[in-house]
Length: 125
Ligand SMILES: [Zn+2]
Image (cartoon, rainbow, N blue to C red; front, side, top):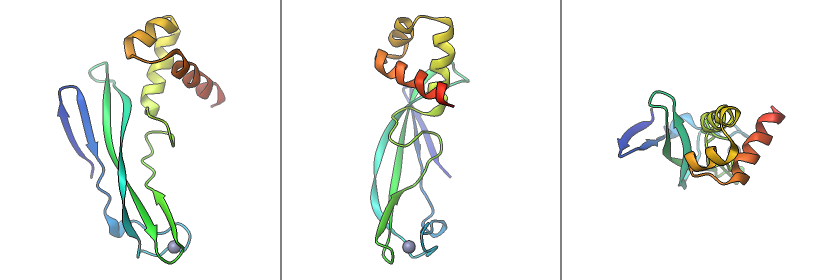
């Protein structure tokens, strides 16, 4: 279960994966090794409080000694390599329909480029 704490607007979620539940996607072995990981900070949106939040998520990296592959846990709430969650991009899209791009950029401290790429991604789906 994720561990959640809330400190001054920074909602922190730490995902502690049970190692025994992780298996290699190539050979199915449960003998995978935790190789470390990286803490990612995601922009997200709290719909209950109607305000942006930051999520700090520790994403573990596992390695299969048999296949010599390593991979990150897929956390599901954000697309790979994106620093904002799916909930956040949906909120930006909602706001852009009601406000100008410049107002949304100010409200969420985003660049126009980020808003533009969020809009393009949503058009693809
Ligand atoms: Zn393997």
